[in-house]
Length: 149
Length: 149
DNA sequence: AAAAACCTCACTAAAATGGTCACGTTTTCG
DNA sequence: CGAAAACGTGACCATTTTAGTGAGGTTTTT
Image (cartoon, rainbow over all chains, first blue to last red; front, side, top):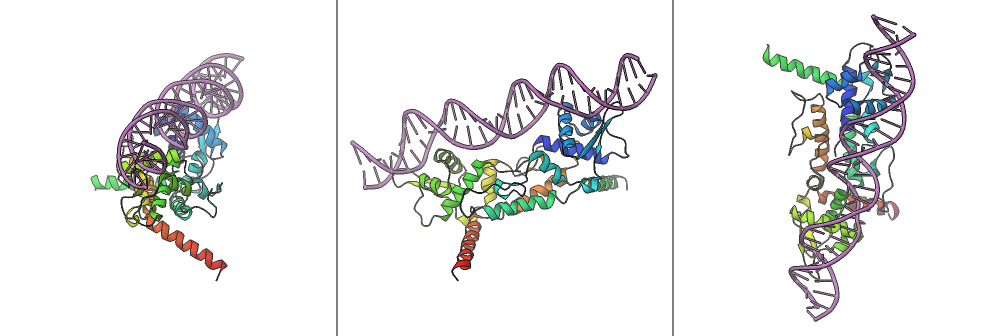
């Protein structure tokens, strides 16, 4: 039940772009540094994300990447599915490509796996990158509050 | 976010044992046949489950396996964790062995991953094998009802 | 004593994972 | 213009995990 490092890197890269203010693109090297991602691997990941239409790039000096959509219209679940494939504990409850179960009439675990998949979806498909940024801003404010005020 | 076939086999093996009435043990070959599990692989899995104290075995003719605990005191989550390891999308939110995050102060995704882990746990740790059996009996009854009554 | 069943433990082929390398193309700026 | 900065492309690779298989041994029942 775990997420690949590639997927986690992709999410962090998107987060860095979402956090970046203004219309100017952010360089790969900057993303890599801020989010502790191996730069060569990050290049591969960003290329893939570009292929999925999640980010846009600008070449040349002063080039870099930026989000293709506003952060409040981009969910974590979308990226997870794009990089790691369907969010489903077993193939038969996948929403995009549900593989037919080998048991006639469906196996004994079908409703159970469905509930697991739904529970995960309820979290990842309702969380946008704007939500994550807001959550961290709140956390940071509370932290300062504990010490200063 | 998916479960290994080994884990799924283990769950189905346990299910077969939970379904088996009486105190007499169930043979590996019977479990394999009912749940469509490669028999050699099932031997490996049952040995592992025995090591975890989930099942007991009897050797010799008329031997086989049975549950070490009643089905209503055995959750799906326990088996999943035992076979596949901690139920956590990333290591830092694992309950048993939480690996320290490389980001000082915790990364931006920590609360999010925690919510994902909790959502999964809420399902798998609250579902016992007795629950699954009851659910399938209900499903079967409803099915007969649609046709006969 | 023979047959049925579990036990041990080594082994392996294939796929996924987590990257790296070399070289190419585009854009900006002095 | 020309060089430097930055993204683009495709192959490549080592390690780990996955999903099993095989051979032979031990225990229990009939």
